[in-house]
Length: 111
Length: 109
Image (cartoon, rainbow over all chains, first blue to last red):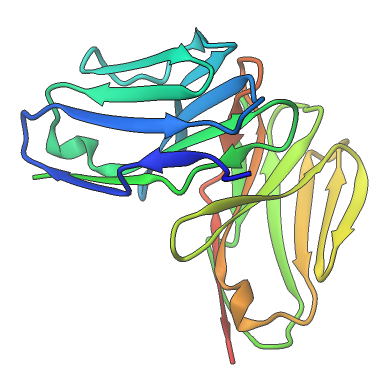
């Protein structure tokens, strides 16, 4: 079991550029979560998929953010255009029941 | 929406000390999670508990459902226990969690 795999681990980009974060959940897990972690706000849910269907996207900050899960083994979180305030660590997590399994996160820096 | 408060925010201890981290929440829940975030950033689930107490090695988690309060204890603390400890409770949508801001623990040798 390789765990939840996220890529890239680090991303540095300029304001206005498109950023795509990737996640491969643990095989057999039917729920996938995207979280953002900042010093000020801690961990916050962005969007949650169940059986590849978005269930709750109320945490997506604005239309610049979009997420897809085309199949059970892959999800993307896209920011277009990126802004400096999007700088944070983005975590993907998956589960079938409990507990939640986290990826190692993608540290995004937007300059 | 459930509000999750952790205390203390930061904690420094000497190796061998007994550690207690507290978590309070505002709305009744079915279960509470304790997570550990390593200095490198990875997050690991430590416990999920709905009543009473759970123990894993030197870690003990307790919960009082009536008082809406949970504690995480570390016995005989060690520098490798240095991490951020986060408590989390179920959120509004199925499967989601609401997280506390975390307690940053530093254990000095």
